[in-house]
Length: 319
Length: 320
Image 1 (tube, each protein chain N blue to C red):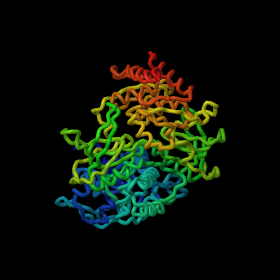
Image 2 (image 1 turned 45 degrees about the vertical axis):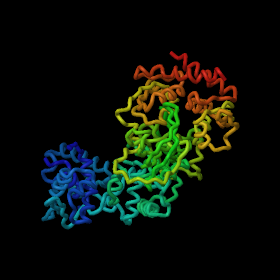
Image 3 (image 1 turned 180 degrees about the vertical axis):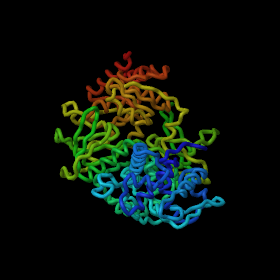
Image 4 (image 1 turned 135 degrees about the vertical axis):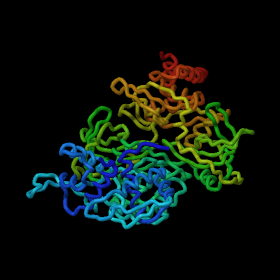
């Protein structure tokens, strides 16, 4: 039997070159000696080959023959226009810029590199002096690509999320702080929700195109970038509040550089700074303050200060 | 260097290699290998297979090529003259990379990348420079511009840098080589010219811990050392790993850092994560943020970290 790569290359060439759709019988006859003897063995091998070709993106067309010797048989071919990459006509500097963009985003996945090769660009190395790591595990990017198409087509999607089935109208994708989010309208509640795309479980099932009208959305405003400002519930405990936090040097200077001078409430003689910090989410607020270790202390409000103390005591006493 | 390649990988590579070769007629084997990330032996093996490909009614080979004296020669192209279209995943990743790169510092927003993006978008039937469906946020602190300029000029910078593990601020002299962002934080990687007489070393610093930055106007010869890929130091196998158990609701705090592994237990309400620990100090703070319902499972010497860290912070509140 032929080497699988040789067989696949031949099959691909045959389906691309044929002027008429071909049945399995005709294919195995043309590729004499490449497929096993016997209908079921050759059928099995052909099905595996077909699946592999489709996985790498080869569009294989099918039709069922009516009339003639082949009546009722499935016939196969490849439409060259659907197979071939359209001419992109990148100039050399544009091609280099795109290659550098892939290098700069650390999209060192096989897919991004495959795209570069198809465009006639080379290998993305570590040549970028400014870079951003963008998450791209294969399962995630597959889901994102499906969602991207569903958003453009205005198609509703269904998926599993936190062990529950969700049906949503997808509005957009947001990449923030290294995570991809899907902004969508939950069909059950009629409310806008945000989903972490990497927590979508299993496959994203896409419904019919044109299923909803997409309102104009500011994706970046879908939820606050600062976790301290994300209210988890609608309860009173999560209204907007201001905390007073004292931070010692040198972290006070670093924080002031980050938040700006308007966040400074008072400066202490020892160099420490009292900051006014807005929050809605007490848990995220507590976690933020504790990130400074013993170099920061909540002064007000009382419920936050006592909450931190209680948290520390129970951590100290935990088994 | 031998590795097993699947038929899928070999075929995909051939389908990009062949059109590229056909446009060029003759290319040194070494260049083909370098470009497509293969060994010369692998290129030879794959191209020889392809050259065997033949279908009736062609009298000659369908793919006319031969390799002689380290050079690949291509004959008259018949099939595979154009690459296969991009898959939806490839198109998505490529456009995300380009749009993200446009938000990085130092990119010419009227330049080649924008022109390239517009051509790509048109060919792929995608929106051009403005895509209402996908937003990529990359915010940058002001120090990034200065650091990037120092990278370009191979300039020494003086920086006052706070190190949390010993809570000390030290003046360092660094030749910045690259700035990058990962999970919302910015870093600079450069040659740390040493505190005192210690040996120069490639180090990565968090930009939000630079208290002050000064461009010195001193320039050095461009170093030729390879930089580690951003984020790779977290994957450094030499770093100790810790296994933590915590409620799934607190996972978001841990995911700010590169995590090797996440296992869901008890129907998903509890998770165990394995992550690289860059310093004990850092792990202590993480544990105290995670609180009483989270614990270090391994290694044992860190199981008590949360208690000692909580105690130190409590002292501050008790004395206040």
